[in-house]
Length: 67
Image (cartoon, rainbow, N blue to C red; front, side, top):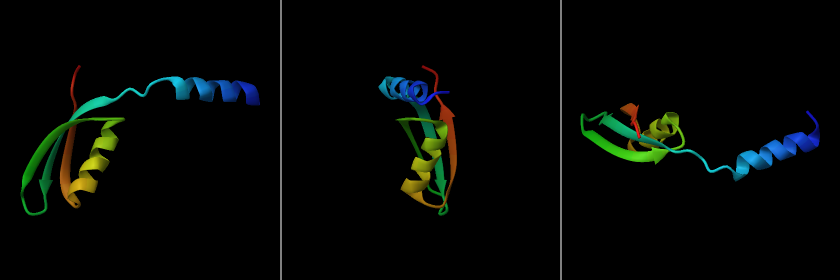
């Protein structure tokens, strides 16, 4: 691929809006507390990372919800 083709592809991808995934996140903390929330994420992996950032060491379950 030439440099101009690569630049054009990158510009097209940047102009395209990111598709967000609606996820239900369920968390059980080390102390046994249970939490659940729904939010939009770039991916289900992003949802797991969000839960770990919020709650620290915990068990996380993420389900992508249908639209």
